[in-house]
Length: 587
Image (cartoon, rainbow, N blue to C red):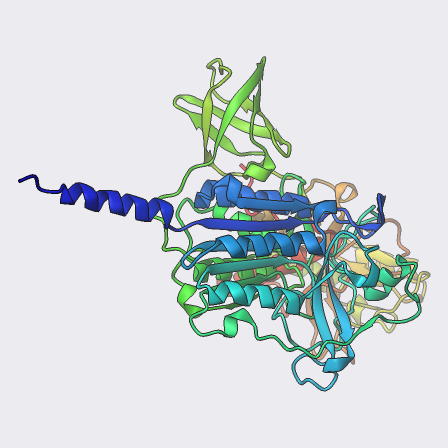
């Protein structure tokens, strides 16, 4: 009697189960650079990095998490309308099943709107949050994709037991439903120098939306009446849901320029950087900690990333799956060779940057110019690179231009000799009634500011020149202290040490502060300011400073001083613009 092939049947059943009913991965990615105040008329509220964000996240999902490209729906610019995004989400909802993985990502503007129906609600406090779609001219504010609309859809994913991860790189995105703080409309000081053609903040005021809409009274704050309070997906037990937001619900999210000068949202850049620097998979808990540290501490951006999620996701990766034992390396293929210039078929949306080093067996190349979909590299070995050669990214080193150039005024003498000259030349000046210092100066363009190298007779010369006017004195740092400070920035790509005060954006000086009403005991102050040009100036000192009770420091005090000066310097650089600080030491 013929026996049925039970093993074959079992394996066939397993194959059908895995392929026909196995786990699928889907993504809906929205990136809006271009906002329109009417059809084909672009708004000045347009952004720069949101399309880069969405395309870079797509590349990350495909290369790192093995998403099928056909399952990644990317909606950009004018295509990103409320009906289009809702349709994409509903389509994904309809085809996904229990155990599937879904990513919803948004990069663009966020906004608050007034909801009078919730004025008495202790959580909402009369406001709703919304994502702003590209069609600002859409009647009835249909360009606003409200939080309640999103939560209803997200809750349906949760009900189907789909593993859903949402990422919002936009303003006011945290918490989905929280109160406002009194200062939520404060302008973010971290904007680029000069006037650009786009905003560097991912926020809009609703009255600005009024000014672009002809059928709305521009003098009236738009009001909605929506009594619904929808539970957050994360509040459902065993939701397997994650929401990652760029900032708190009362904060603005910034656009930044990365090491290669490519615009991105700060949250997205932090996510991309985390995976750039790790060849291993990353747990959600580690990733969220890395994002917070990078944005709030390393980059000194005034936004606090906010997270809501099912705690069971902590040990899994970003998309909600167990950590992968191995990850795919980033690769690029040579598509053209001209002398020593090599063109690669991958660019910054694929995670490549200026300075990256790639290998192909014995060949080694480095990228010196990166574009969206391609890059230019040069060979570091003497071999002839051939068209079609495939390279693997093995060294993620990045090069960048300096954000801040500094010069450190240094004396010729170390601290002991410096103090001897100081006590003879400058200390007597501090006892004069017309001596001003860091803690007792005021804006007076007529009062002179002197730089003293502590040469013999410098004190008397300053007094003679001041002629009873109020005066201030700037000093160099002792040679040994200056050397210690220079060590902090010696290989720093974002903070560049230059050789003269004329080359610098800011100069580091020393000032002696006498005892006064605003200063309990005499001390030294290290502070940045513009290079002293002539004796007269309005602003003698900057707001950033490091205070030292004495200049002779033990190792612990020296370490504290260096850390403090680094902190002050980075804060100064951040005020100068929104470029990303490069964490790779200069080679």
